[in-house]
Length: 233
Length: 333
Image 1 (cartoon, one colour):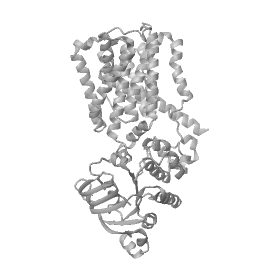
Image 2 (cartoon, one colour; image 1 turned 45 degrees about the vertical axis):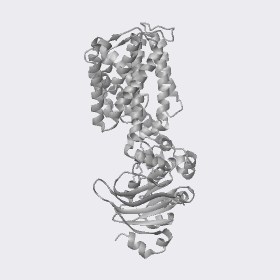
Image 3 (tube, rainbow over the protein chains, first blue to last red; image 1 turned 135 degrees about the horizontal axis):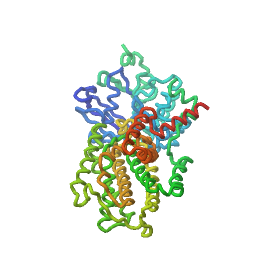
Image 4 (cartoon, helix red, strand yellow; image 1 turned 120 degrees about the horizontal axis):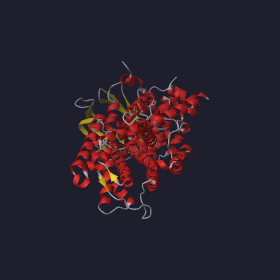
């Protein structure tokens, strides 16, 4: 399959500080990847770097073979990088439906298709952004990213702080997006097993470096390695 | 109880209604019938009425940048004045057909707004306040220095052409009122459409969390420059309307006091609600008319007093206060 995104020896951080050290990875169109690691190892920074919000000291990011460096964040989003940040960022004075129409770009995903995936958002379409539960906010954050019609969805800890029943519901949706959404997905998750069950490949970060890469099934079937890599000491 | 839990028990109260969302509500229709009724019932107040409509439109133009996009400005009168002078000078120099004059004024103000927008979009609230304040002062002084063109502090008198070649502007303000009402209505239709479009929604997104907007494909700087330009054009139309209906342009039309008054009107009426500018302009100008009749010296005391009360106790101005009052009544039932 054609290559979608590749990072080649990327060293990046905020200002002069370095968070990511010589990170390389490649992702094909429609592929999926779990990004694992303990707290503070640079998982979020890696996503943020893809969106162009950090300072890249060395290395190269390319998108469908083209260098990403010159593209400002909004162009990256328009080119197909769909980021769902951990903080979700709802707009308090906009309704659910307004969140979706405000960002819509032409493509497969439109309001009807998004509502079909998230019926709960349709039920609450007239609720304002500050009147949503955590689970609804997360659904809306994903739905909003879908409305931009991305080729790659970057999910940053989508399950964080959610009730188990909501996690199950979201897992089903994300699994469906990975399988039939027609786009690649990178999911960052503290719960390694959840993420591994979603994605085909896995990468483990530690202190800004890639310390392990394999397919998810292999890592899942090797609990010792998994524990050594991601368990909190 | 968390906001989410509250929302789930009282879904009707939670789905706050806000003007406008594309549909015409009864209140909105009533709003537009009000000036029509006033035209017939209060013929003595047509001059004041047209000035309220014009000031309201001007306040709406400020609302576009302040209420929707979150850009504070203390120099918005610059564009009002530029529009007024454009229409006035055009008429003075022999081309006095009102409607084309209005369009030229809009274009000139839009161009000025576009140029200024590059300075305004960057920076924090304080920077924006200072930049717009500075631009306003410069515009005033430029008009003052160029007295050979603008008439300076004496102002610029001219004769406006007949509207559609038929109706002249009379002292009673009959033509002025209907002309102002028609123009204000048409411009508001366009603005109404604009603020409920995806573009308008994204402006509110920028206001409420601008840093993350680029991540969903919105070029923040460009959108802010666009709305600033549109707002300048609308301010220019309001300025041109005032010039044409009074056949005079005073240098105060682009002065700082007008920018400050405008901000007061908008905050009184309520920001980000489209009609707040009209309500604020009406409250402000009727209060001015009434209070200065009682005591011509101290009426600003009362305007200041109401401003403080509104900002402290009725967030969202008159319209915001009415909204929360209605919500309270609904949730009590």
